[in-house]
Length: 172
Image (cartoon, rainbow, N blue to C red; front, side, top):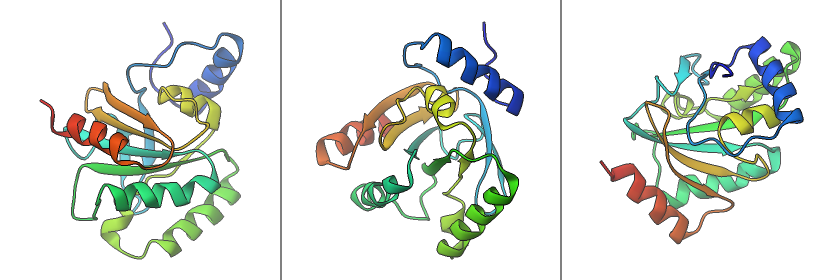
């Protein structure tokens, strides 16, 4: 069985594996480490901010507008502790990473807002598979700290999708 922990070497191995045998979408989140824009290290799913957390995933720069629609439609605020935005950036070059992170930090002025943004750099396809999604569009998940995906919707915001996510957030 392939380890569920992402390191750089494991990410490359997973990329090779996913290109040779495309598995069915995962029911559980793989373990992945990232940092918020405040430089707080998060090991997901263990360090999710709530027992059930809304993960807003974007895989393309053009998806950022849809992320903003999801945040507005779900009435997400920096004071809430049950959501995390994860833009997946398909770049591993450290110089480019630094430039992108500087730009993200410059656009996110509030310390509280920075706690909700945790960009993830690496192979976008492999990371999408690790999240159990296609990576072709914005995906919003509800995940518990054990990594179990409780709900998944893809695409732009609409009230029916939002209801599915809200129900999963409060279910026990």
